Image (cartoon, rainbow, N blue to C red; front, side, top):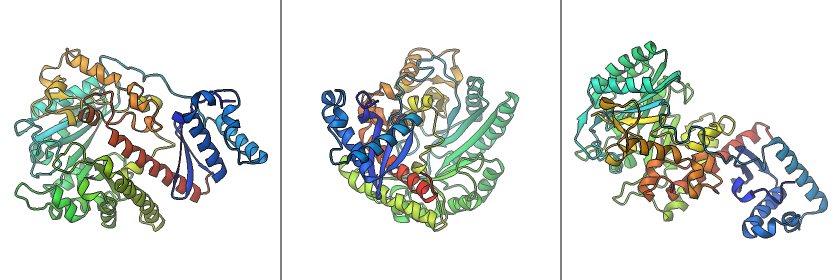
Amino acid sequence: MIWETYPFTRNIHVYRQGGLNLAYDVNSGSLHALDDKAYAWLGEIISFQAKYPREAAKPGRLLAGTGRELTAVERSEILGEFERLAREGTLFSAGAELPPPGTGAARPRLKSLCLHLAHDCNLACRYCFAGAGAFGGERELMSPATGQKALDLLLTRSGEKAAVEVDFFGGEPLLNAAVMRGLVDYGRRAAAAAGKRINFTLTTNALQMDEDISDWLEREKIGLVLSIDGRPAVHDRMRPRPDGRGSYDAVLPALLRTARRRAGASPYAVGAYYYARGTYTRYNKDFDRDVLHLADLGVNRISVEPVVGAGAGLDLGPEDLPEICASYDRLGEAYLAYAAAGRPFSFFHFNAGLEDGPCLAKRLKGCGAGLEYIAVAPNGDIYPCHQFVGRAEWRLGSVWAEPAEPAAPAAETVRRLAAAHVLAKVECRDCWCRFVCAGGCHAANVAATGDLLHVYDLGCRLQRKRFEVACYIRAREALAGGAA
């Protein structure tokens, strides 16, 4: 029996959502819908152990001190079902306590590159973390030679990996569209010569995405992330042009054209990947209305993210959580209702991946910034990710002076990033959501706490809420399909 030694409080999460009693097994990633009595007893066991850890550890005490309102038959039936699930490894599963393979490796293999084609922008978004596209420096465009050096670096340092990925980023990368086209051609030829595949994605505000560019993106099978915040008033308030005019009407045609062309594709299909990506702030905590506005337009791949570090009265705080959580709750119900009505859409944070989620090593190490993923600025400087670009203390080198091994202090930065796995973060060790977010975004953690090993608390709370709703959706879908 596991009852006296199992750490229930950190390895099982029980909650109610939309009339369902749910239990999430942290280590296996399994989800269970429970009847009222099993749910109440499991919740009691978890609460008793958390409140009286020493008492709960005494033989027989955990079970004797809980579930007293149950009959002997009910206790026996529930215990029998719990033990069956434990034998299956889907409840009370063993913990994963080892750091990920390769922790501390000096030379991890790259698989992804964020290529900053432009440190300039044709919008003046109020929440922009990149300082209107310049990332705190000069406004500049990447040269073809710098882009080629970056692609060569990716292909060389990807080692035995058969496929690599490149995201064209900015600022606004379409301000440097000619260089982008040339780099796609160069990258495909260089990858083929190296015996590899290279996949490209473009992150754009779509303001300059005319039909000619759209046609080229389709022919070249470029994944797309198109920025739009939802309702016209919300979008225009947060994403104006430099002269103050709104941009909603200008970017919508490109988004709808993409949505029509890629409507039937898998959200992760190479060359057909697209998402409409928005940001919510204190001004649209009812962001579920923005998501549904896009869905009603026929956009079926949608992501909205909370603003981080914008200042100017836009940032979210703990006092905003009730309204934000209510928006996620409403969105979860709408997501199910739209699917039932034959109008399904994908919401990025509701893709729970319970059956086909990342492997244990990935769940432990999480973000690959600086290890498997780097960002390259227009001048060739290398950073762990796009959110660190322009911050001198996080510079890892240059594509123009790439050494055989990272030089100090870059090597120390890489070592710190490799060591910042989820079990090294104090706040994560007992969090039931630790293997879902793997400790969260390094850049957000540093911005909020100044430390890689301490987490952005509000971001954690939002992640937990999103995942609760995602699991609820999966449970509803499974129950509707007749699954246990």
